[in-house]
Amino acid sequence: MKERKYKTILFVVKERIARIVLNRPEVHNAFNAAMIKELLEVFNRIKDDESVRIVILTGKGKSFCAGADLNWMREVINYSFEQNLEESLQIAELHQNIYTLPLPVIAMVNGTAIGGGTGFLSACDIAIASEEARFGLSEVKLGLVPAAISPYVVRKIGESKARQYFLTGERISAEKAREIGLLNEVVPRDKLEEKVDEIGRLLLSSGPQAVANCKELIFNVSRMSIEEAGEYTARMIADLRVSKEGQEGMAAFLEKRKPKWMEKLKDV
Image (cartoon, rainbow, N blue to C red):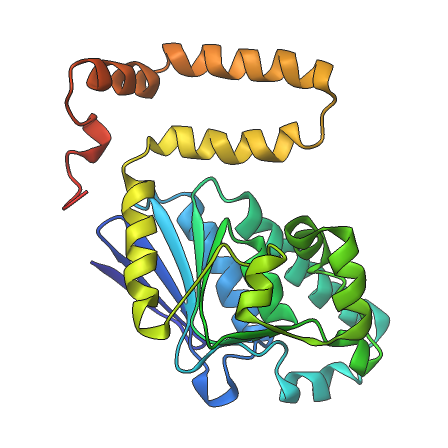
């Protein structure tokens, strides 16, 4: 098990799974400049760590993330445009790093996620939440907009729902969040870890390069014409069929055995 100390987050790697825990429970895991910096650092580390296969993002205590920290906002209110732009670009970079990470990222939403907290889970590949969780995009109540997180939230819930929830700032129940596509599944709080572990086992049984290519495929195909996608997808599958992982996966299937990438995994 690998562990590294941070001030605002917990970070542990165990059995190929990196767990990142927002660790400011006294303020419902609200983020500040220090947390953004530490999250940027840890996601950059994970990207280059071949021992990691899956990332789980969650919060400590009763909340997932309550958005921006109030004390930080008291500082931000006196920032210049240039200072605000610099910090906003860091937040945008963090969300992009989560979204484009070549590893599957699961948001284990243990409680309330407001504003930027909703943004974090929207940048993840899969979001599983406790049925007690509540959500909101309430920036308009402060005379602001959910700007940095909007590319990810809009992709999750679509323009129609984004218009409703961005403009009204109304609270969203866990079940409603699942209905509109913000969440993949909702489970009782005491079943949350179990459900995330189940999904983790499914992900670990898949080829790591295939998973990375799936993320690339989804990102690129959604922006292509049918004609462009035809050439791109044909080349991708041809490349994968002759790749080391593709050859091993097909051979393992035909020989009715587990592929080599599963040999060191427990109980998968």
